[in-house]
Length: 206
Image (cartoon, rainbow, N blue to C red):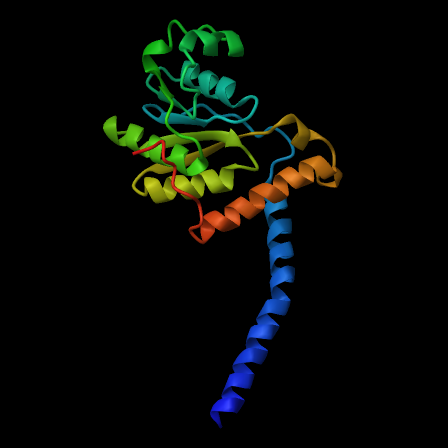
């Protein structure tokens, strides 16, 4: 076999792989959509002594984290990605949940500005408190990427997914609604980027 023939074969193989790529991406997106819960999942309590990590960015996440914290008196809560000036009093007003009895077990994480930043902030928080189990609270469509980042940042911990289902994803056949589908597609692209290591570093977390 000549070098020219070998090069042609390599080019044909690359062309064949490139032709299959769109189909593979579409199949992956369909599989991703199938994992997004359309109904609010069962909401078990946090295990005793667990850390609860809420990744901010969507309705219902903080309230669910506070519910878990109130139900398990030995747990602790990190709300990651809180605005720099936010206070517990403002959080109490926003969620309508009394926090006086819970305040000593709540940490407001202010440094994260991305999912990767959330993971790094949560890893530091968990290690400082020697927590080996984390209950991860975020939207169902965001959960795969959140878990991926957390496993990389904190491989020694046991992670328990506790997804929250945003209202648009509770609608029948939500995948037929262009706005919701765009949101899911955008998250899928971010997940693919995270899988190949393209998630940018978060300058807010050291």
